[in-house]
Length: 128
Image (cartoon, rainbow, N blue to C red; front, side, top):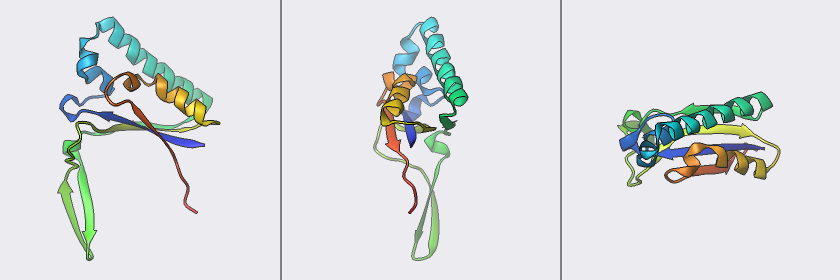
């Protein structure tokens, strides 16, 4: 069963891994920040070794993003997204796990689960 784990971050403090750039993350002692970074690296290694990691990829900041729309056959490309939300999509993990519980367990070990809006966990659908 595949899941996408969506990591959101505030564009004002953009950087990867995003938890190190949040206000909460910046207030942590260096030792605690290093421990969180090591926790993330360990998780990525374990998921890769177990075959559960499909991909983990940070995204560029929203300021480097484009939105493409086609209306009446005409393509329009604009800068964006510029939503009213405080946080924007910062990165994604795609995992392939045996159970929904395992997906939740993995999401809970991503340091961003402790900072900001958490980690969004969404099952991946298939085209029929």
